[in-house]
Image (cartoon, rainbow over all chains, first blue to last red; front, side, top):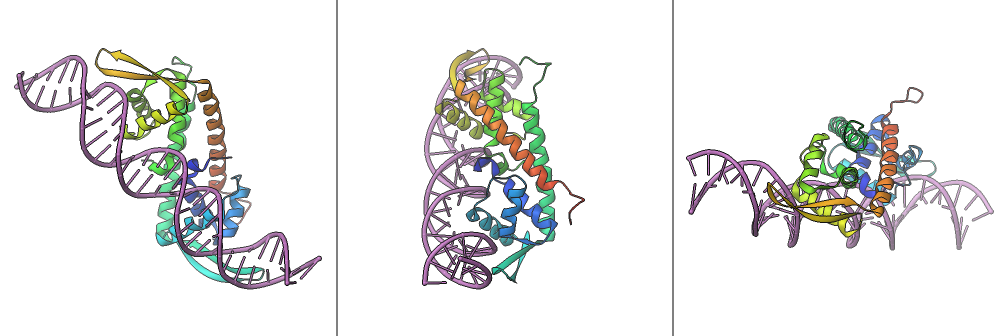
Length: 111
Length: 111
DNA sequence: TACGGTACTTTGCAATGCTTAGTAGCAACT
DNA sequence: AGTTGCTACTAAGCATTGCAAAGTACCGTA
């Protein structure tokens, strides 16, 4: 169970990536995150993220009827969103490299 | 430049790891993080983390004189700290796996 | 009619890194 | 002596973002 603090900034990037692959809506994004191995993300988490992304013009929304429930709010990525996604990926890789360097056991130094 | 939000929870784990390798003090930790590829971590960031870790009994402190400046506050990891470090590493790996799964391009699915 | 699954919104909280300001020791240069 | 710069730590308050909780509402089934 990944603590919430460690998701900060990262969840947003993952959601953006999921949207970039295919137009989708909040409820489905939550399910996909589960499939990707994240512990269940509360609705109170995911929808505010989507609203923020929309407000910042990184994604745009479109309501559509559903045959099995209330209307869905479908999101697709914008040009700014693609740029942001690219920046996120770079930052993520930088983070990954840094952390893994910290945790790499180095035989050459005093451990 | 990794945005500060993405460091949340992670910086703490990295600092704990650095201390676990060798007794060390705040100023030196900041320098090591730089060596590991992190952009400069402000003192106002690092010292509060250390105080928090100490308060939570994950590290313990000992002041020592320095020949080239003010006294240094040396930290070493406690038993609880080692447990916490282990837990952090597991969470980090879980996060890493999850994010990389989200970002892996899958040829078998509609992209 | 009630329940469960689907689907979204809003409010307020908590954790943590950051900014800023302050204190202080030591060495080197003027 | 005074100034500057590096070393070294503390503390107060801010901003961001994930989370919990509560509310609204559509639809199918029992």
